[in-house]
Image (cartoon, rainbow, N blue to C red; front, side, top):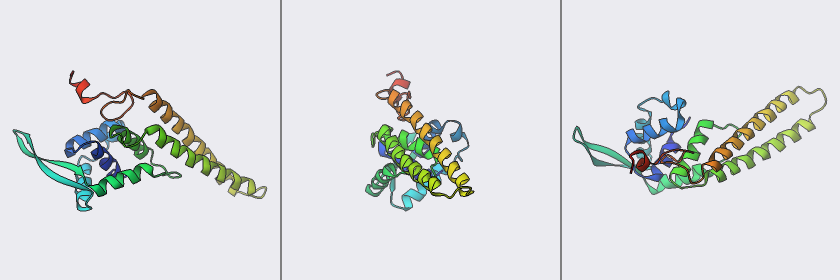
Length: 193
């Protein structure tokens, strides 16, 4: 999974330390996040900084760590986030990346997760109709039909997953937490404020 776009989208909400970004990614991905290399976020931030998509500033930290790096988006980084959110990634989706896209879009209030799901659904339906037409056009007994049937089944499964995403985000309207996840908690709620 490419984490650069997810990191940029999380920074669209607010500037952040690398440690906080890593924690948010791990929380958003659940068990999948546990396998994330601890240094991956820092390497990604360095690449994004070299590419001119983020800037790094020193900030006061804790007594044992007086200076910490805080990363923020540049205008070019904001443009890339906007483009990423509008991108339709099927037929080869990275489900974890799409999941992070929904979370980041909601957390930073950059896009409505339901609209992102709808855009993906439109693309899948277009590809499904195209594949079904191709299967019907194959001559009787063609072995290519088996491949096309497999593609149809995969697209149908992806459509069902998008329906589940839509249900989760529709039920979460107005109930999203700090990470934008359905049922998440705000930092203020977590601290009892």
